[in-house]
Every structure is written in structure tokens, then in C-alpha cells.
Length: 289
Ligand SMILES: [Zn+2]
Image (cartoon, rainbow, N blue to C red; front, side, top):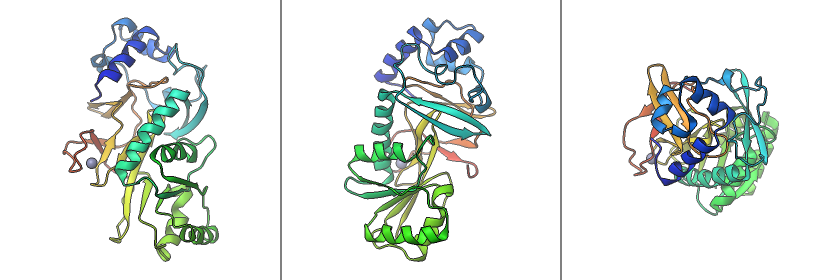
């Protein structure tokens, strides 16, 4: 599903300077890196979260293309009980922020809006830092609140939310559930919508929107973000394979690509053409992630 001149140029780089991990994957099925084509991905054995966790000998270097510059940021995500290190070079961060800005705009966040988030910072990817990068690129105001853990802090934060006329909240269940409850109890006038990190749908009250964001940082931080018409559009640099066991993904961009990855989460391709007109492929969830 991924194509285009940028991918072609990037593939030439992979053929010339594969990461150690990709070199092993290709070698195991008899493909010379110099001959690699996207069609060959279907011949590669699947990697699961346990195969890309922290247990490897060189969790930072193994995934990075041989000619990649040193990373300028590290993050980590949890998948299937395993911690996976995610590395970003300056170019990776640039691409993530640029694509994130487009994905957030498609979700309904506009230039000039005030956007609060409760996401963790630190090593957590995606986190407050990545969201801030994308919002800055979009021209929105980034308001990193940090996690809101209990009802008392949620009431105080809801007051701040109202007084600062926040338009949009970005949150996940761990960091934002208490704040969502407090906001629903006394909805601030400026509050227009919520971007929820997760695949959970919510009943809408008709006055505010609710959009979903599925993040697989080891592949793409903005892997799938829901548009204003309700479709989870994929990062166009992620190649999607439909296999008998489910979907499998390969990131075809950046300095630390991941090939033939089965994250073990219930996703399916949504074959409908989205009414928003965006031709990017869509996925849908079989159950909450
Ligand atoms: Zn759409």
C-alpha cells in the first residue's frame, strides 16, 4: 500500500545499508539486500514484540540502518508484555512531527487551537513531547498538563482547562480518564473535542467530537488517526499485508525501519473509501486495544 518516489529513494538506501536486523531477516530467506523489493516482504518471517524487545544484544543499534546518524531521542513502548526501545534521529523526529501535524489536522485540530494533553513524557512514546512537536508544526498551542491521576486533581485541572479556553484534549485512559470524567461533569464552554490515544469509542453528546488514535511507536507514532468522518487512516509509509493470521506491517521510511512486524493486536483493513476524500488506506479494530 505504500509507494511513491520517496519510498523508492529510501529503498535504495536499505539495499545499500540495511540494518543488522533487516540483513538477518533477508538472509534467512535467501534475499540479497542489493536485490530487495517491497514484494519480497511477504517472504520474510514475521517479527513479534518478543523479537524486538530490550533483550537483544544491541537494542539501539540493531534496528538502525547502517548509514543512519546517531539517534537524538530515545523512547520506549510496551507491547504484549515486552518493552520495545524506539529511536529517533533528527530526521525521524522531523518526519514524525510533519506527518503528525497532517494527521492531527485531519482529525479536526486547527491552527490557533489550544490543545491540552495529559500524556506521559519521559521515555513514553508517544508522549507529550511528540504531541508538542506535531502541534507546534500545525500552529496550534501546546498545553502539556501531564497525567491527571485522581478526581481531586482532575477537578482542579478542569478549572484550568475552562479558564484557559482549551479547545481540544489529547489523552489516554491511564493519564486522562479522571479528567474526562471531570470535564463531562461540567463541560467547559470552549471544549470542542477529544483525541483519544486508544481504539475506544465513546457515545457523543452531540456538541463535542471524539476521535481515536492508534499508536504503534515501533512502526509509526501516528500509525492510525481517525479523520472527521470516522475512519482510522494509516500512515502512508506503513506497508500493510493481509495474512491468514491477521495484518502485518512494515515501516518503509526513516532511519530505524521495522519489517514484517506482527504486533499481535486485532486490526483489520477497512476496505471502504472514506467520505473525507483522503485516499490513505484505513484500518479498523475488532475490539478495543
Ligand atoms: Zn477519512
